[in-house]
Amino acid sequence: MRLELHPVNPQARLMRKVIDAFADGQVVIYPTDSGYSMGCDALSKKAVNKLYHLKRGMKKYLMALMVRDFSELSDFAKVDTAAFRFMKSLVPGPYTFVLPATVRSRKILDVNRPEVGVRMPDCPFTNTLFEMSPKAVILTTAAKIREEDSFIDPSEIEETHGHLVDLIVDMGPQPINPTTVISLAGDAPEVLREGAGPLPGEGSRSQMSGPRLFPGR
Image (cartoon, rainbow, N blue to C red; front, side):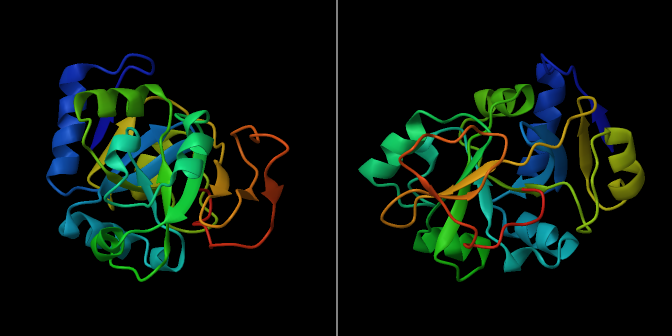
């Protein structure tokens, strides 16, 4: 199913259908500030397993959770004072932060990985989603099944993935702008990937290695 929403001011009645889809354990494709993404309710085991089934290699990579703000993070990631201060000036925005995962996070995501990714995006869809459903926690990844997939137009996504997912949120073509990935799991911030988010300044150091990120995230 493809649902067309206004690209700047998503209609509340249609957004409620999207929220209901997440609550029902469905896999949804939706726009973010890094392009179209695919995700589900991270607290629904049925939904998480369904997403894993679609993206069979997903567990090899760092998981990313999309939340509204810091108030929803404590159950899933350990955020110390230094990490909070570092992130606060950069969110919402096109960043993925790598943080130490909690036991609950590893259990919910069914992975034995010490880190978890966190996203607090800034775009009309996610802003409206979290305004209407502030407690939502979305397991999110790029809207691609194969590594070579690269879609900006929801009509192309529907043609390729429409039979695989439950809902496609169409808010028009969206450019692919992978997030800047910064690890806050060590003693100092480390830039794992430069992307759409401006680098925070001279205090961070770049590195090429680190947790494997799902292509396009």
